Length: 194
Image (cartoon, rainbow, N blue to C red; front, side, top):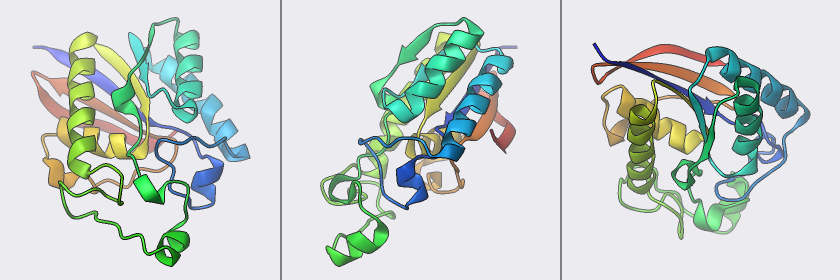
């Protein structure tokens, strides 16, 4: 029997999250709650006992991953594929601002950009799945600190669901999912807030 475990972690709350702004490739500082969440998440990851910590290069994920890797005394790997969905013209805007500007979202299509000039859910799915597969084969226990869109792509894939399941799970800031893969079959062990 071959067992691997992944711990998926969404970054803590940022000012953009709290104000309802779409933040993909940009970055935003933590709120006061986000600062508390960051410390708790780093400890939680370290206590889980990873062999390695993988992270998005964006600061809101990387700050947690750096601290967790230091606490656990394990390698830290930055992976561009773990970067959040590109929101294109909607980047940095609230939903009301996108309506004012006539920006239309396309969440139903696999191939159309979610927002004009951005990425499609098929694109984020493919890069997230590739990163997840690499992480599964790299070590027995890998923690991945990333973003909502990547988390929403990885989790269904690891559980044997398809790209149409990308919006199935509500992934909050500081969300944690532990997935056990036994002989390649995924099982959700934990789905909680950190």
